[in-house]
Amino acid sequence: MKATDVLLVSAAFAAGYALTSARERQHFDLAEFIEEAVAKGIAEVETAKLALQKTASTDIKIFAQLMIDDHIALNQELLAIARRKHLAVADDAHLLESARQYLLSVESESAFDEDYVNHQLQFHKDAIDHFRTAARSNDQEVRQFLFFILDKLNHHLRMAQELESTFRSNAIPTSSNEDVIRNSAKFVEEPNYPTDSLKH
Image (cartoon, rainbow, N blue to C red):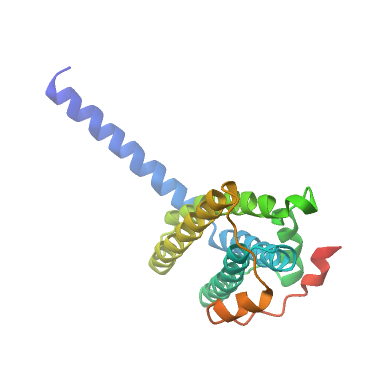
């Protein structure tokens, strides 16, 4: 193939890629993205609360409390973006209903820790994929927020992977809830979602 032909093919490929990227950005729905992210965040908080109740593991309790704090803060910021952008986002009842599908399904009480860790691995892999779709947004504020959140979600995933490794080695220590409260970071105030409805 001649050099000029290679250049023409490369230019055509680049133009096609640019058109595809532009088309994807046009089809990106920020309100829909925020709704799904908030619903997943609610489910993550509720699953972490369940972990605090059921596990005897110090590491899992500390991880779960961090998930509560971080995902409450993330949801608050997502909803603040929606308000600033004047987006029509679903009400609490709809968000809670959507959250049901993302809740941890416990197969066995005796295997709760394993179920929770596996759920966290998959949840954060999916969350990272979901937030990467926000790169399609033309909104600079959204794109900047994306990079901040992706860094945090990747950190969560690495922590979950470390938990899995510790779990496999049967070396997860246990503690009381008081130890977790004493060692955890400053708590974030949770929005007043009527989460009791998720348990029915």
